[in-house]
Amino acid sequence: MMNIESATMPFPVQLRTPIRVDPVLLAIVTTLLLGGLVILASASISISDKTANDPFFYVSRQAIAALLGCTAGFACLFVPIRFWVNIGPLMLLIAFALLLVVLVPGVGYSANGSTRWIRLGVLNLQASDPARLCLMIYLAGYLVRQNKSIREQFTGFLKPIVVLVIASSLLLLEPDFGAAIVLVATAFAMMFVAGARFRDFTVFAGLALIAAALLVMTKEYRLERLTGFMDPWADPFDSGFQLTQSLIAIGRGEWFGVGLGDGVQKLFYLPDAHTDFVFAVFAEEFGLLGSFVLISLFAALLWRIFRIGIHAAKAERFFEAYLAIGIGTWIGLQAFINLGVNMGLLPTKGLTLPLISYGRSSMIIAMVSIGILFRIHHEQQVAARPANRRKSVRRAKR
Image (tube, rainbow, N blue to C red):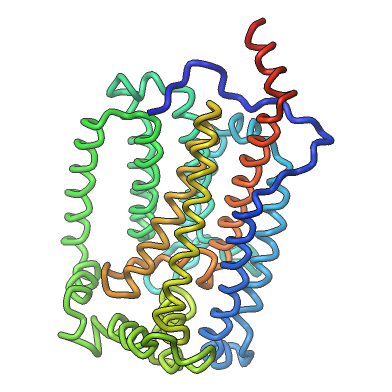
């Protein structure tokens, strides 16, 4: 467990200090990003041609979003972590504002029975994506400021739970059940690493499971998704249609796949082939071997992110540690759920595969988060230099 007794602010960074980027993280993210654009082009070519009379409609929009995300992420390289620490309460207000605004009639944009998007000119912003990052930044700061309380007092644990309940309730009003699950799980991971008592987790985890079960049972479409997932072949042309088509695509890939661009299921058989079920297209065209490579890349990404968090904790830079753990948990859990849905291991949740699926706001926020991780790594490297260590020791003695 992590203990916070000393100052938690980052060491001062010299203005002329060159940016130190984690080369391994950069290589993994670049591979996923570029590879994702390639498979998205293959998965979306048919629906793009039909809906927009342009076979590269979706991939070009995704490429622009990736460029915007890379620009925003690059800008985050020059934003000191201290800035994010200081604006934590403001980030909480922004998160709630986003989740409230999307529910305002005439502002929120609806599709497939859900109101999750805010129209910003040419971009539809999915409110849950920036709201999640804002909440993680706030929670990381809270865990630093109230670490003793969250370890020893029930009230310390209760305060972030209240924030989560409000945020999750707003997400369920959209409705976005999958985003609510990811948010709660991510926050729980951050609080667990911060040293929250296990008995507090047990109580709220039990209540969360009961609430989730009630939510599933009280909404017919959620219950249909659950029963359809458990036996999709019982109704392969209705409730089980999407999953059966996904399983057919994965099965057709066999060991080495049918080849890039030669997949059949994306040709209007598999719904949402370019968004939620892009992995099924990938598995069909690249087979089991390609799927193993893709999953290995995500595993490597998580290992690198958690490594940054662990190193930050060892250096007693706890805000950075909690935030890195939160970002890693979010990306890892969302990827796991998406892959599980595609393979029939989990019921449909409507969550994209990070850096791969079509989703412009998701792409931009993912790149911003990665930019913050690069900044965390940079400040760790600068603080670890002998001259900076000596300065920190002298300040501690004063």
